[in-house]
Figure 1 (spheres, rainbow, N blue to C red):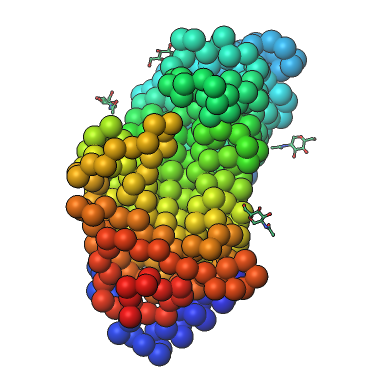
Figure 2 (figure 1 turned 90 degrees about the vertical axis):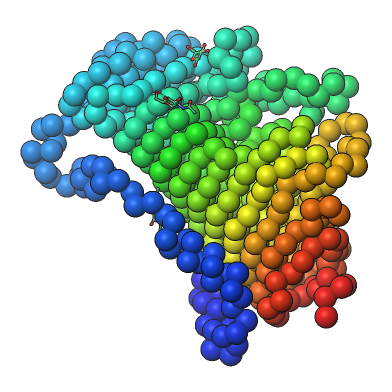
Length: 438
Ligand SMILES: *[C@@H]1O[C@H](CO)[C@@H](O)[C@H](O)[C@H]1NC(C)=O
Ligand SMILES: *[C@@H]1O[C@H](CO)[C@@H](O)[C@H](O)[C@H]1NC(C)=O
Ligand SMILES: *[C@@H]1O[C@H](CO)[C@@H](O)[C@H](O)[C@H]1NC(C)=O
Ligand SMILES: *[C@@H]1O[C@H](CO)[C@@H](O)[C@H](O)[C@H]1NC(C)=O
Ligand SMILES: *[C@@H]1O[C@H](CO)[C@@H](O)[C@H](O)[C@H]1NC(C)=O
């Protein structure tokens, strides 16, 4: 696939250099300039250690803290959270670098807080499986969280293990499933939350059947999330894969997400979000938003999705905002995306309304501007492959489409629906086209 895209890009470059819109170049420049240099933490050395290379001086200065040494039972019925907490305290209070080891066994844990800042860098190696008890009453005090990391810096989580939320008991009682209930419940816990963390690396992990969202990066900075496999059934409610909120400078790479809601959702206060090598579906696709709910002023900027395969999802690449909000979603690039049987492959919805009551018409809206769609192809499961439903009062601006080819199911024609938007002039090689476009 990469080769094909490369050839396409190359062809475009050679045949029509002018079709590279200024807007796009501006965004590319932003991309290069604005990414913060990752502070020189010990990551490089750590990586070597992880790979088992000998570096005796450093190895000596790294202590291993095994949860089994703090009384973890891994017997399939005991709550091991106290042992985990003790191991964390030991590692966190030590001025020596630590690796907390969760061996390859199955541990059950209750809601748990791991709080920093710690005295030195910490690694958490999860080789085994961490399971949640399927009992909703255990979560009354935990504020919709199961495994929660707060204020941790220079932290790495890895190890090839699995985190299993055993979420079925939560899905059954979700108001999205039990339609009779008014949908105002507080919702279920997020399996893995990182809150107010800096210099974070989360890699090579599986999360399955979370109570609600798989993982949430909230108010974090400098995050690398890679080689993650997140899975929940297509019908599970609100099980977003990776939720990014108020987080700056996050790279999400080489991850597979199959779930019941957004594979990646990027919401208010997030900037410099890069997603590459994403396999998504089933699910609701890669979404920016929702933004502007209940009149909120929300801001998302500099989002780059480059390289994704999206299959059998309800949406492909989506921007969704409620009427009545303010703020912006701007400087966004979706490129090199392959869609298979996606219901709304490309969609901007400024009239998003995910509630029982119909939404009233309102004048104010979150501004959507400078959005590039480039090298996007594949099939739409619905007749409308491209939908820009923008606000009449705050139209979408600076929309760039380059080399976008979406067809209907059997390779037939698909349609574009376009309301209230301004394209950047240099539009090239697109099908379907908006009726108003020449
Ligand atoms: C975790 O910390 C929060 C406060 O940030 C508190 O409300 C919650 O009860 C704590 N959870 C546990 C399991 O200790
Ligand atoms: C844990 O053990 C199982 C069974 O021996 C093995 O298949 C798996 O690869 C191990 N996981 C890790 C992370 O070492
Ligand atoms: C993050 O932690 C710092 C240091 O404890 C604190 O000053 C700041 O208010 C926290 N930020 C958020 C968003 O909670
Ligand atoms: C994200 O990736 C870019 C290169 O694409 C790199 O320059 C940057 O340092 C990375 N940021 C983090 C937080 O890993
Ligand atoms: C395509 O998607 C539609 C709607 O989600 C689904 O009903 C259909 O089975 C899918 N077709 C294929 C070939 O996967």
